[in-house]
Image 1: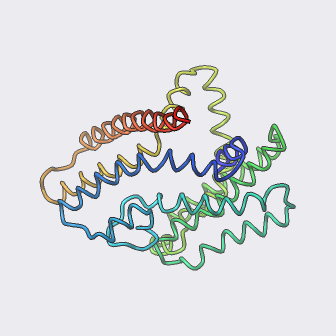
Image 2: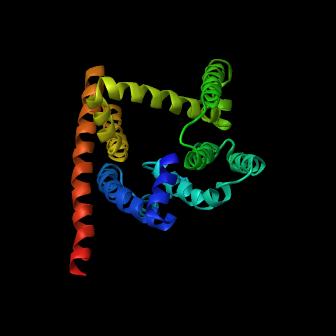
Length: 282
């Protein structure tokens, strides 16, 4: 979310950012989704309404009988929330930010004991990202005391998460989103630690940072391709077509990443050419 706000400030408007994200996300998503829907049709059939639900990214929200990538339902909701939250957060008082934080948290309450809680329980964390982006726009560095406090809270969050996993029944964890709420404490300090490690690694082995940066540009494709590939493999296991081994899962993971990187490169070139053609005609 921090990078979202930075991108919006560079492009000048939220709608310019949204247009850029649509061009970036939908082509790759639709390629994988189309293959997934064809596979599902050949395997057991699929209704027209379910096809539309997936293409419109509402399959998870609508609790459709056939769902693919639930996070694709969430990303557009997060962008729309950001459209309203960013202006309210910029240069806001601490009291207003606290109220907005609890408002975001309140969206989880109607979805307790509902699988869609996975989506709405992330709203408080989204708002924290907006707050840190607003802070970063006005300050070049984070004070050492604040960084230390956030890292301490992160450690507390990890401890809380371990306690929840060890001591709370699974049905309560899923019903109330207890897997995700501790990351409100974990994420800010974790980001600071990772940034410090990345800064040190960049001095020692910059090629690793370049590799991570490259893969970071392919995360959408890696997520989509591996989810589809793993589903096909699980179906093959349940149909007794294959039997699973650690080596096969590792091989599948590696092949999924390689294909995802190839897909990302191809779609990047196609979208670049498509955007250049109208400009040349005008």
